[in-house]
Length: 117
Image (cartoon, rainbow, N blue to C red; front, side, top):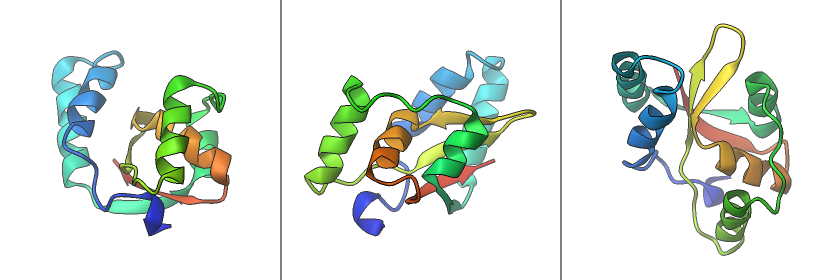
């Protein structure tokens, strides 16, 4: 499992999360979630459970970004953990949707390191 993942999210993941979250929440709230994600401990959850909780479709393997992540993993490069927010009705993937889909194609039972707030 560790062979697929970096130990911590990359620095640029948090501003990317803010960009996405700002579409769902006012900017101060989006920034607050990102700050909480930076402080949260990294946990592990199965790819299939994250996808189900988020109620999002599995992107096709030929999606440009999904395919790039699949290629990275096959070349031995590590992916950044994903950033999640527990929503009222569903899980919000603040950053890492394409990485989640890429790993799902390797095995839906693989555990993904993530930060959850």
